[in-house]
Length: 210
Ligand code: 5GP
Image (cartoon, rainbow, N blue to C red; front, side, top):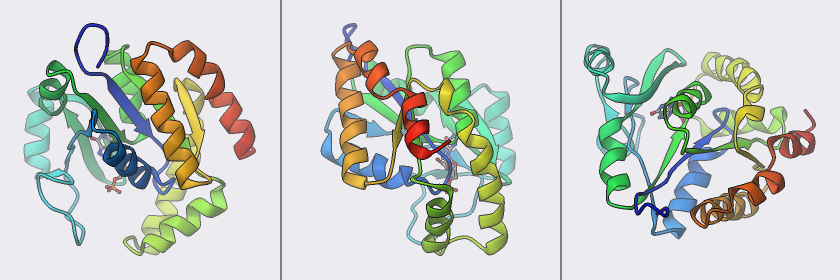
């Protein structure tokens, strides 16, 4: 919650395979004051996923209707599917004073920046491009073609890191979760300037070797 009594909007973006789902789930499970927003997507359900829990799974037609009705805070096409965060999914918790965490890709994060300058944007960096490739393969959910496409996209996405408020290198899960929790906590206390130095994107990019 912030000084006005409303919830904060936090965005975690990263190249796919940088480990952001794991990091975000852990942060949320350890912090009762923040919840994950449930996005809409046109992609097919993966094994183990549930409609309304992991995503709202909708057809391309329905997604387009929602775009036309201005239902999304942000939306993007990623890897041939549409993904978007509806205003509805964030307005209720934020009005009730609960913080929301958006786990989204990089183009969507740029739209949040334009539309909500109070949102705080965190970029997660994988330890290296090699590890990113191994992680994508290790998930076993994507075909070789899809892994190739995701790697090309990932390289482009790394260029967006300097436009984020904060960046954290995900070379150790525990450390990364603790860093994100520190950022959330510091922002709630109005200490984002202090954190901007400690978690400066330029610093994390130097660690990454970019
Ligand atoms: P996946 O298909 O692996 O679940 O997600 C693919 C990418 O879409 C990931 O980078 C994920 O963070 C991102 N994503 C999930 N939900 C949203 C959303 O609501 N908006 C945007 N822009 N990206 C999203």
